[in-house]
Length: 213
Image 1 (cartoon, rainbow, N blue to C red):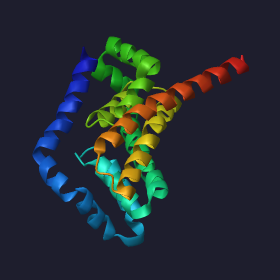
Image 2: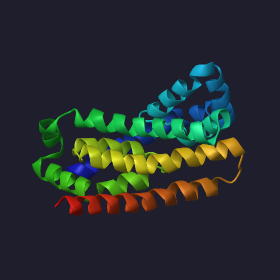
Image 3: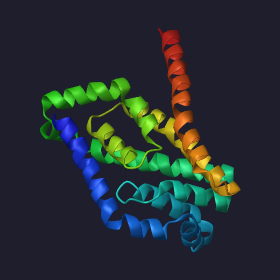
Protein backbone atom coordinates (compact mmCIF):
# COMPACT_ATOMS: atom_id res chain seq x y z
CA UNK A 1 0.00 0.00 0.00
CA UNK A 2 2.83 2.41 0.87
CA UNK A 3 4.41 1.70 -2.51
CA UNK A 4 1.27 2.91 -4.28
CA UNK A 5 0.99 5.95 -2.00
CA UNK A 6 4.59 7.00 -2.70
CA UNK A 7 3.99 6.59 -6.44
CA UNK A 8 0.83 8.71 -6.27
CA UNK A 9 2.53 11.37 -4.13
CA UNK A 10 5.40 11.69 -6.61
CA UNK A 11 2.96 11.90 -9.52
CA UNK A 12 0.90 14.49 -7.63
CA UNK A 13 3.98 16.64 -7.01
CA UNK A 14 4.91 16.62 -10.69
CA UNK A 15 1.31 17.43 -11.69
CA UNK A 16 1.12 20.25 -9.12
CA UNK A 17 4.29 21.80 -10.53
CA UNK A 18 2.78 21.49 -14.01
CA UNK A 19 -0.42 23.26 -13.01
CA UNK A 20 1.54 26.11 -11.40
CA UNK A 21 4.23 26.68 -14.02
CA UNK A 22 3.13 24.54 -16.97
CA UNK A 23 1.53 27.28 -19.07
CA UNK A 24 4.45 29.69 -18.81
CA UNK A 25 7.00 26.97 -19.51
CA UNK A 26 5.00 25.67 -22.49
CA UNK A 27 4.88 29.22 -23.87
CA UNK A 28 8.59 29.81 -23.35
CA UNK A 29 9.61 26.38 -24.62
CA UNK A 30 7.39 26.00 -27.65
CA UNK A 31 9.38 24.62 -30.58
CA UNK A 32 10.10 28.11 -31.91
CA UNK A 33 10.81 29.41 -28.41
CA UNK A 34 13.16 26.53 -27.66
CA UNK A 35 15.06 27.04 -30.92
CA UNK A 36 15.48 30.70 -30.04
CA UNK A 37 16.46 29.94 -26.45
CA UNK A 38 19.05 27.35 -27.48
CA UNK A 39 20.36 29.67 -30.19
CA UNK A 40 21.62 32.02 -27.48
CA UNK A 41 24.21 29.44 -26.51
CA UNK A 42 25.80 29.07 -29.92
CA UNK A 43 28.14 26.09 -30.07
CA UNK A 44 27.08 25.10 -26.55
CA UNK A 45 23.40 24.75 -27.44
CA UNK A 46 23.59 20.97 -27.14
CA UNK A 47 24.75 21.22 -23.51
CA UNK A 48 21.93 23.68 -22.72
CA UNK A 49 19.47 21.22 -24.31
CA UNK A 50 20.73 18.31 -22.20
CA UNK A 51 20.38 20.47 -19.07
CA UNK A 52 16.77 21.23 -20.10
CA UNK A 53 16.02 17.55 -20.65
CA UNK A 54 17.52 16.65 -17.27
CA UNK A 55 15.56 19.47 -15.61
CA UNK A 56 12.41 17.73 -16.82
CA UNK A 57 12.93 15.50 -13.79
CA UNK A 58 11.69 18.38 -11.60
CA UNK A 59 10.05 20.89 -13.94
CA UNK A 60 7.22 20.28 -16.45
CA UNK A 61 9.37 21.06 -19.47
CA UNK A 62 8.12 19.85 -22.87
CA UNK A 63 10.93 17.37 -23.52
CA UNK A 64 9.63 16.34 -26.94
CA UNK A 65 9.67 19.98 -28.12
CA UNK A 66 13.27 20.29 -26.93
CA UNK A 67 14.09 17.16 -28.94
CA UNK A 68 12.34 18.57 -32.00
CA UNK A 69 14.34 21.78 -31.62
CA UNK A 70 17.54 19.73 -31.47
CA UNK A 71 16.54 18.04 -34.72
CA UNK A 72 15.96 21.43 -36.33
CA UNK A 73 19.35 22.75 -35.15
CA UNK A 74 21.56 19.68 -35.55
CA UNK A 75 19.66 17.41 -37.94
CA UNK A 76 18.04 14.03 -37.28
CA UNK A 77 21.22 12.07 -36.47
CA UNK A 78 23.20 14.41 -34.21
CA UNK A 79 19.98 15.89 -32.83
CA UNK A 80 18.70 12.38 -32.17
CA UNK A 81 21.87 11.38 -30.34
CA UNK A 82 21.76 14.48 -28.14
CA UNK A 83 18.04 13.99 -27.45
CA UNK A 84 18.50 10.33 -26.53
CA UNK A 85 21.48 11.20 -24.32
CA UNK A 86 19.45 13.87 -22.51
CA UNK A 87 16.53 11.49 -21.94
CA UNK A 88 18.92 8.78 -20.73
CA UNK A 89 20.67 11.17 -18.34
CA UNK A 90 17.35 12.47 -16.96
CA UNK A 91 16.15 8.94 -16.21
CA UNK A 92 19.51 7.97 -14.71
CA UNK A 93 19.51 11.06 -12.50
CA UNK A 94 16.12 10.20 -11.01
CA UNK A 95 17.14 6.57 -10.54
CA UNK A 96 20.45 7.28 -8.79
CA UNK A 97 19.11 10.11 -6.64
CA UNK A 98 16.49 7.78 -5.17
CA UNK A 99 18.76 4.76 -5.03
CA UNK A 100 21.36 6.81 -3.14
CA UNK A 101 18.91 7.05 -0.22
CA UNK A 102 19.99 3.51 0.59
CA UNK A 103 18.13 0.31 1.33
CA UNK A 104 17.48 1.09 5.00
CA UNK A 105 15.87 4.43 4.16
CA UNK A 106 13.76 2.79 1.45
CA UNK A 107 12.54 0.13 3.89
CA UNK A 108 11.65 2.79 6.46
CA UNK A 109 9.79 4.76 3.80
CA UNK A 110 7.95 1.88 2.16
CA UNK A 111 7.82 -0.70 4.93
CA UNK A 112 9.59 -4.05 4.68
CA UNK A 113 6.70 -5.81 2.94
CA UNK A 114 6.11 -3.15 0.28
CA UNK A 115 9.83 -2.70 -0.26
CA UNK A 116 10.29 -6.44 -0.88
CA UNK A 117 7.24 -6.52 -3.15
CA UNK A 118 8.40 -3.44 -5.06
CA UNK A 119 11.92 -4.81 -5.50
CA UNK A 120 10.61 -8.11 -6.87
CA UNK A 121 8.19 -6.29 -9.14
CA UNK A 122 10.90 -3.93 -10.41
CA UNK A 123 13.22 -6.77 -11.34
CA UNK A 124 10.38 -8.79 -12.86
CA UNK A 125 8.31 -6.43 -15.05
CA UNK A 126 10.03 -3.14 -14.21
CA UNK A 127 11.91 -3.13 -17.49
CA UNK A 128 8.66 -3.14 -19.42
CA UNK A 129 7.33 -0.28 -17.31
CA UNK A 130 10.46 1.81 -17.92
CA UNK A 131 10.41 1.12 -21.66
CA UNK A 132 6.72 1.88 -22.10
CA UNK A 133 6.78 5.02 -19.98
CA UNK A 134 9.35 7.11 -21.84
CA UNK A 135 6.90 8.67 -24.30
CA UNK A 136 4.32 9.53 -21.63
CA UNK A 137 4.16 12.81 -19.67
CA UNK A 138 4.85 12.74 -15.90
CA UNK A 139 5.37 8.97 -15.64
CA UNK A 140 8.98 8.67 -16.91
CA UNK A 141 10.35 10.76 -14.04
CA UNK A 142 8.18 9.09 -11.41
CA UNK A 143 9.00 5.59 -12.64
CA UNK A 144 12.74 6.30 -12.73
CA UNK A 145 12.55 7.47 -9.12
CA UNK A 146 10.53 4.42 -8.08
CA UNK A 147 13.00 2.13 -9.84
CA UNK A 148 15.84 3.67 -7.85
CA UNK A 149 13.92 3.55 -4.59
CA UNK A 150 13.10 -0.16 -5.00
CA UNK A 151 16.67 -0.80 -6.19
CA UNK A 152 15.89 -2.25 -9.60
CA UNK A 153 19.07 -3.83 -10.95
CA UNK A 154 21.12 -0.97 -12.39
CA UNK A 155 22.05 -2.74 -15.61
CA UNK A 156 18.47 -3.89 -16.16
CA UNK A 157 17.15 -0.36 -15.61
CA UNK A 158 19.66 1.38 -17.87
CA UNK A 159 19.23 -1.07 -20.74
CA UNK A 160 15.45 -0.60 -20.55
CA UNK A 161 15.92 3.17 -20.30
CA UNK A 162 18.13 3.11 -23.40
CA UNK A 163 15.53 1.09 -25.31
CA UNK A 164 12.96 3.76 -24.54
CA UNK A 165 15.19 6.82 -24.97
CA UNK A 166 16.74 6.03 -28.35
CA UNK A 167 13.48 5.79 -30.37
CA UNK A 168 12.06 8.80 -28.54
CA UNK A 169 15.09 10.98 -29.19
CA UNK A 170 15.56 10.07 -32.85
CA UNK A 171 11.85 10.20 -33.69
CA UNK A 172 11.33 13.73 -32.38
CA UNK A 173 14.66 14.95 -33.77
CA UNK A 174 13.54 13.67 -37.17
CA UNK A 175 10.21 15.46 -36.76
CA UNK A 176 12.01 18.70 -35.92
CA UNK A 177 14.47 18.39 -38.82
CA UNK A 178 11.77 17.73 -41.44
CA UNK A 179 9.02 19.98 -40.09
CA UNK A 180 6.43 17.19 -39.99
CA UNK A 181 3.22 18.64 -38.59
CA UNK A 182 1.55 15.34 -37.67
CA UNK A 183 2.58 14.46 -34.10
CA UNK A 184 0.50 11.27 -34.26
CA UNK A 185 3.26 9.74 -36.40
CA UNK A 186 5.92 10.65 -33.82
CA UNK A 187 3.78 9.45 -30.93
CA UNK A 188 3.11 6.14 -32.71
CA UNK A 189 6.79 5.54 -33.42
CA UNK A 190 8.04 6.62 -29.99
CA UNK A 191 5.43 4.40 -28.33
CA UNK A 192 5.63 1.41 -30.68
CA UNK A 193 9.37 1.01 -31.28
CA UNK A 194 10.62 0.73 -27.65
CA UNK A 195 8.71 -2.48 -26.80
CA UNK A 196 9.87 -4.09 -30.04
CA UNK A 197 13.49 -3.19 -29.25
CA UNK A 198 13.05 -4.40 -25.66
CA UNK A 199 11.73 -7.78 -26.87
CA UNK A 200 14.83 -8.23 -29.04
CA UNK A 201 17.17 -7.11 -26.24
CA UNK A 202 15.57 -9.50 -23.72
CA UNK A 203 15.81 -12.32 -26.25
CA UNK A 204 19.52 -11.55 -26.80
CA UNK A 205 20.29 -11.56 -23.07
CA UNK A 206 18.39 -14.82 -22.55
CA UNK A 207 20.37 -16.49 -25.34
CA UNK A 208 23.60 -15.11 -23.85
CA UNK A 209 22.69 -16.44 -20.39
CA UNK A 210 21.91 -19.89 -21.79
CA UNK A 211 25.24 -20.02 -23.58
CA UNK A 212 27.05 -19.17 -20.34
CA UNK A 213 25.39 -22.04 -18.42
